[in-house]
Structure formats: structure tokens, C-alpha cells
Image: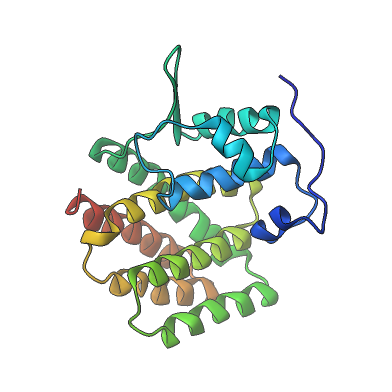
Length: 229
């Protein structure tokens, strides 16, 4: 099946949802479905209603099915022959395997970011640091959003698009687990505040310290979610 490469017009509201313009319809479908799975609007185990999604997203079947294929590869959807497509379940085994992968990749990203950060990069990292230091003790969702902003900034500073793409995939799976257990979690602002030392290590150009702190942060995330699953 060929991907529908027609573009979302710049004035189209669907482009504004993503903050980007010029996306293919298949890319838009992929990002929108991924976000709905991550934030639990499409909860674990739920069957995917293609007709309803096509109507709500104003898309044809081809771009939607291209998105489904990618999300199956991302392990966010499961396709069963003759039964249909379902949102993947969340389980404790997945948490361990995802965390193992993230420990390696996040440490690598932090190390490379510390080695490669430019003056402009350090300015963006300092902005993240300032946002952390000024962050009130808000909701867990606010903390998760800030956590995501920091990770994206570190990934961009690393300057390795292949590792970045893989990290984004694993981070999406981790975000989904955060949201799955969110209601039962104690305030997680302390966990997110661990990024203060990590950002400072990257800004200071200390790759060994940055890598160690990134790895420890993933382990703490795993332990926090494990207690709630």
C-alpha cells in the first residue's frame, strides 16, 4: 500500500494541532494516534475503530493504515489477523525491557550532548534549567510535560538523528507508562528535579557525570512506576 503523500495545508487546523505545517497525511495520522495512545485517550487493550478515527481526523483509509503499521512497529498497537487492531497492553515486563534500552541510550545522549553542546545549545539548556528551578509543585501532568521538554532538548543537543529517533520511540513508551499509573503516583516533581544536576553537567561539559546521572534517572523512573504497576 502506497503512502498518501498529500500534504496538510498550512491553514488546516490539523497542522496546527502538531505545531507544524506541510506534514503528509500519513505522518499527521501517525503523530496524532501516537499521542492519543500515550495520553490514554486510546487506553490499553482498546480495539481501534478505524471508521471513527477516519471521521474524527478527516483522513482516508490509506494514511490511517500507514500510521497503524508504524505504531505496530513502535509496539503501541497490536494487529491480530481476523480479530482487528488493538492498543497494546501495559505490563511490568515491558517496563524492565524499555528501561534497559533507555539506560544505555539516555546515557549516550547525555554524554554526546555534554561533548557537543554549542553556545546556543547551552542557552536552551539553561532555559530548561530555569524552568525547573521556577517550577511550582504542580500536578504530575505538569511535571511529565516539563520532563518531556528537557529530554527533547538533550536529544537535539546530541546531534545524532538515528539515536534521537530511537530515543523518541522509547520515551513515548515511557510516557505512556507514566500516564497509565499517574492517578496512583505520589507527586513526582522530585524525580523531575533530578534533571537539574543532569543539565548542569551537560552545560559544564562533563560527559562522564552527565551519562551517569542520565542512567540513574531512568533507573529511578523504573522503580517509581514498578511500585505502582
